[in-house]
Length: 301
Image (cartoon, rainbow, N blue to C red; front, side, top):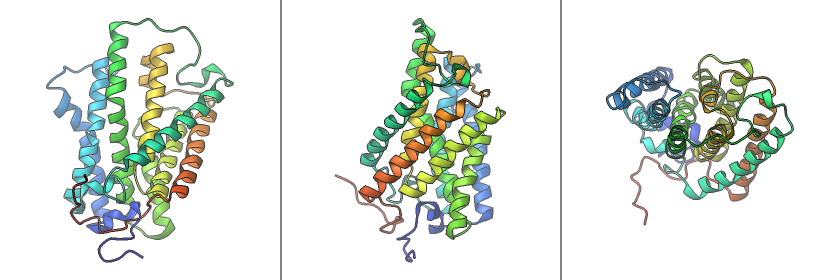
């Protein structure tokens, strides 16, 4: 039972520290949509002319816009819900860097298992191929490589702050108990998959499954670190392989795929879910607030 100062609240209920309810949640969701469409115009187009998203400039524009969703999500949390934006990071109001590093290591294990499994599946299953000759190094591939290394991690984190951060807390503040928790996991995952636009059913299910696992890990670990680690590594490996031995243009707009896409990606998500949940329990990672997260935190030294 949470105390009056907010101690004892799980991650998905932290909006209850301020203003929560259907109206506020809908207003915030609309703010996310507006930010997603306006940010490319406000932040990028004054610098770059409109470009095809399949070019390096187009990919950079997309990454910058999605990375800025971190600030949008935090701003909406403050402006609409009257809760400090830092509550999006974790129940401690900050990124737990040691835990993020641990999750990154576990993500490597999960991705490794997926790559092994993918080697036994048909190559027409979608995604980056693990075979074939290495692509030539050109100015275009170098530009893509720099963007992948420097901006893709920020893009992945921005999506986590928006979907597993803001939307999870906005939905979780609507209802208590298990029903509220389930909604806080399922609804953002569904919106995450739909936000990618028109796509084949296997690709949609793949993204939905990722969103469900990432959402479940937010609840199980009390923060975004696990989702960020998996999202960042998944995107780095996917785009990296496509750039080196595949077709980066196809990887940037993955709307088609066969059902062979699912065994590998589901194995990755489920392996990661089991590993992170087990390690989190062993380490007793904080799942609820242990102190009033509204209080000003002392500087760390």
